[in-house]
Length: 87
Image (cartoon, rainbow, N blue to C red; front, side, top):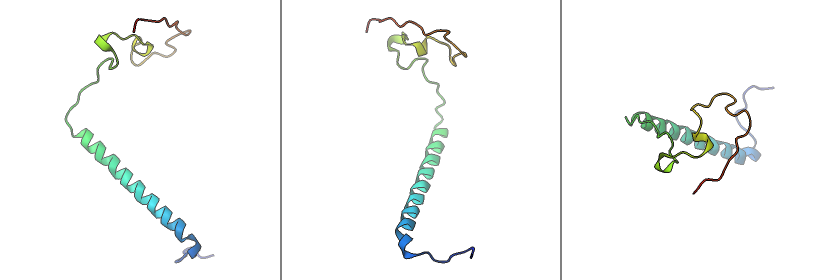
């Protein structure tokens, strides 16, 4: 069996074109990823996020903002009771 086949049957020409098109899409996606990483790392804005970006008036009322960050292992021994609050 030959190790190198210099040609392929014409029946596979469509699949070869589709494979080539998919590889071009992958290359463009990888290039886009590295451009975004370069822009982000060179922006110079090294700011931290707010403690609770969803809190209006800095009053966190949801469970994810009532625990420390990162949460400890087995933060709640049992499921906490959720009560309605004013909206």
